[in-house]
Image (cartoon, rainbow, N blue to C red; front, top):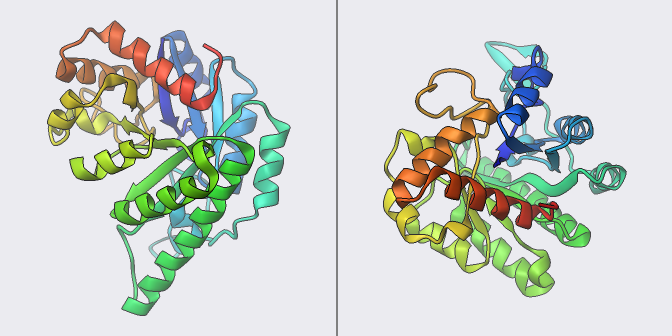
Length: 284
């Protein structure tokens, strides 16, 4: 059994065949965590997970949804605006996210939350305001996760120092209630080591099938600290690169991870699945 620790198989990209894709993955012995990015997709993750054995949900507000910006049509339907789509800036309503978690035992994590400084627009002062807003919302969701005793699924892009600082501070106050995984890791080895020092896991996506940037780090890191994911519909691994990703394709990432580690596919699949289930408090 494999476990896709970060999937969006309930997104708009799967609006015509989500059920088929999820069933195909489960038939291939791939269980999964469906991850929300705002209130609508978080609610959908929970309700979708309720329909399947082997599917669980994470709920949270993605940092890019704390301000207005370009809309990704893969994610959800939106109103056209000029050459693209304008997404709304969602106010983080802790009570509404708490209600989703309370209504479903399938909600096992808070995510996808964190910081994203990759595409900051506007003047320096406007960029500072965006960073501060993201940090404010991230802090609120760290507290939500600690209150509910759920792990965090962390999105971090060009913001590892701030993510580490905030998580370390939160652990000093809330202890082991602040835990989780840095999803789709693309930082440096030094940044990964800082997150590992806090007890967080590191998850790799299909990127490792076409980039050897993290091979040395992967070889040195105990397998018990690693997870695998698709982040579907994005980051499709070789040999399907360029096509829509889906949870079943996590097998290619696991196989490549096994090759890097010099281990068998079955060993890597089994251990990373156990890692994910332990982190998310899922019965094996």
